[in-house]
Image (cartoon, rainbow, N blue to C red; front, side, top):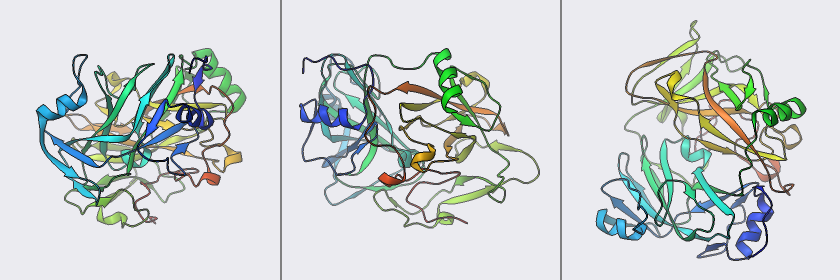
Length: 367
């Protein structure tokens, strides 16, 4: 693997090439839909370790060494097991890396994981940070899992996180964001300027949804099987929130909310995007999980006209008043290393194309 990889985020064909050349290894063949348009789903291995605390191994330790020192007990995932809320688990993943020089990787929770308030972070040996694997990393991958609101049922092969591969820094500059917006219209609606990415604001009017503005999670619910689609009744797990004359919402501390952007989002086929929290100095809240947006999200030709960004939101330590149109996150766009051979959308059976306010795929349609 001495070739020079082109600069940018790797689309599916290049991810498959990494796999073929041994840069991505797996204990068994990839699932047929595991490679997404510009990311790779990561699968849980056979064992989960309940550990006393989250950790980073640091430059002197492997993850396995840290697990041995911190583990409370081992859990067999081969037949499925429940991971309890408020606990921290470490699971060796089925995939491992032997990245070539110049190619790095980053990880994020899958959309469905974030919408269940399941906190996940990928860790590598001797890592100094979460969710980042430096170029040339050679070693196993582990997933830290901490359900925050709902207990979840997982098993070997469950896919809670995803990984993106890139060469170089392909994030757009202010001028490049503005030029791409001028040519491809990155956001529709709202009135936020495009500069260091695309600012997204909150919709607290619920127009076109009979005033539905979001959902607040319930406590002490049943278990959610992460591999079952459309199996659960929304009202058993969520309290719907409606606009009632005032275009504002007070976020309660320690509560978890699903809200939606005012703007419709478009990721052109030539680019990918990542949601990052807005400047924390503007308020005592945060978009709880960053997220990947694959090429084709919100793209009309891929069935995505009008796609909104669904936001997983928590207040910090005090109640906080959100107002309609308040900025809550930012999309940073990156160029792809080459033209993709598949796009996020209806042809791939993508769960969240053309979404407005939508819970995770585990729930039956609401309303």
